[in-house]
Image (cartoon, rainbow, N blue to C red; front, side, top):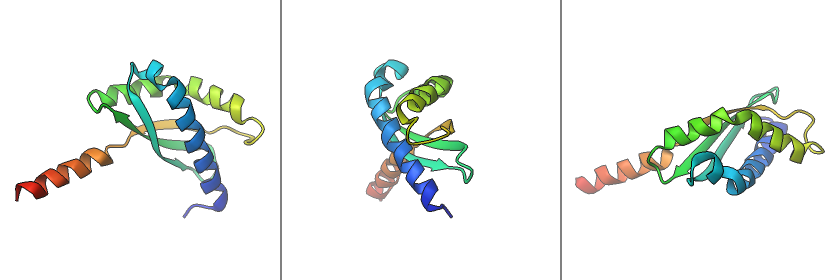
Length: 113
């Protein structure tokens, strides 16, 4: 169960991370388009799990790993931008969101039948 504060902070982080990856994402991942699909934040607002969708899908795990390696840089960039809105910027843990691939696979299986 998420609190109102968790929800507000996660939406703020999703918006700002999306803007950041729109500007800097191709430099971090070698030209891939990054979309922030979900941000889930811990109750103490200390850790944020960020789920990313990568297009094109090949080598998506490597792209997410490249972003994870630069998590400190991403956190400091957001800290500079959000310093007047958040007292503490959470640590980021980046994960690949493969829900679109899963949906495509199910649709392909249903078409075969």
